[in-house]
Image 1 (cartoon, rainbow, N blue to C red):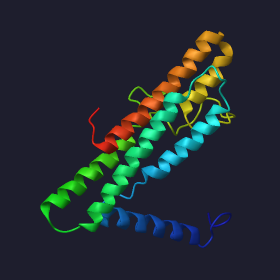
Image 2: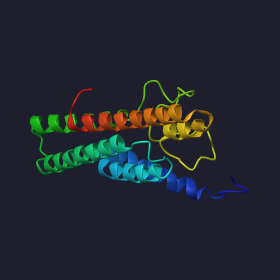
Image 3: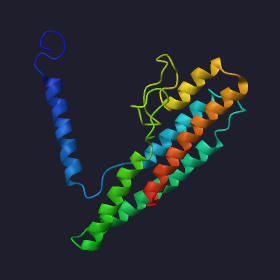
Length: 187
């Protein structure tokens, strides 16, 4: 580090300060600063890119609907957070509502996980973010879908479509689980 990268450790100091501020921010905020609205926007962009990788015989309608569902649930959670922040007081009922919202925000992220993991790599559980089998893949998100597209070159047309459609269904279902968690539904 001294010879090549950061001889006076200025970058290290800056990064440490950022992590410290983040830790203080997370510890002091009444409501976790998770923004699922921007998450839904990012998923919509990913879906648009994905649509250019699959042919018209493969439907992404369920994926589109699940992203809209997440968008709606995120808006409801965001509105609830604003209402609770305006009412913020030491009242037990408000504190319990904030706790319930924080729990839902945490559970929503867990909704994107698949307990079985990615095919052939069970240790990778996240269905939106994770490495693809093919490191040269242009899809750097939806790793299960990217892998099924890559593997489809070795399958018959019917099997290829089923495999890709199944992976799209898994991602859509994960997004629906996240949306359900934001709404407080148990799955």
